[in-house]
Image (cartoon, rainbow, N blue to C red; front, side, top):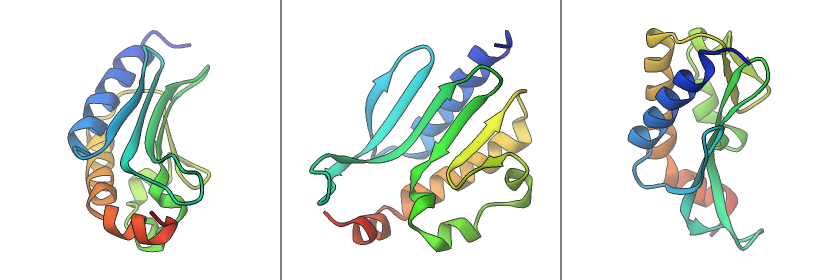
Length: 124
């Protein structure tokens, strides 16, 4: 694990909290951070996942879970972040990059603003 990862994690944690103010913190450790919706998902009877951040062995992972179900949100992923994308919801960072983090902030804010669409897509 790089010595930079804790600082990257802290920056991304703050970013997610600011960009998704209506979500609820359900896990907050030095290596994992999870936000869930304030409402209960019909299928699981649990709050739906909104996002999570984790320090991994070779990168810091930042997940925006609404990307799984909202096609319009996927269309909003900027090319700069596509280079960091792994799978449907994950963006990986090995170094701090303020420009990429601003793109991530915009995408996370948009995901939080589409919360009514998320509720419709997965049911409440």
